[in-house]
Length: 104
Image (cartoon, rainbow, N blue to C red):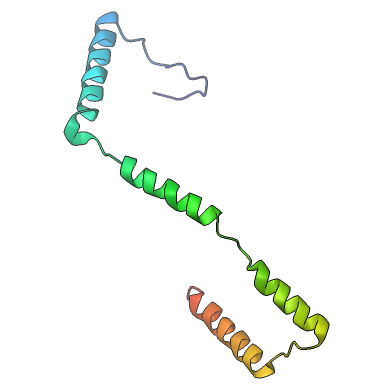
């Protein structure tokens, strides 16, 4: 059978007997799929995911109090940058990126 993109079958149309047989087998397939052994209950998992989404949505991405504290320290001239710590963190982040890259 060739597909022409119109959605209409190119072969001969099924007879009414073939159609009724096809619909009854479709019904039995639906019945088998809805049999208790074939069903999967995901309502518990779904509920838990909704709870987690609600919890995460209430967690701020940025600690505003800490940002305000650092802003004030900069404004007062009390903020000190530890260059060694910054350099070590940069080197470590590059190491992690290099290790995470897939091998070529």
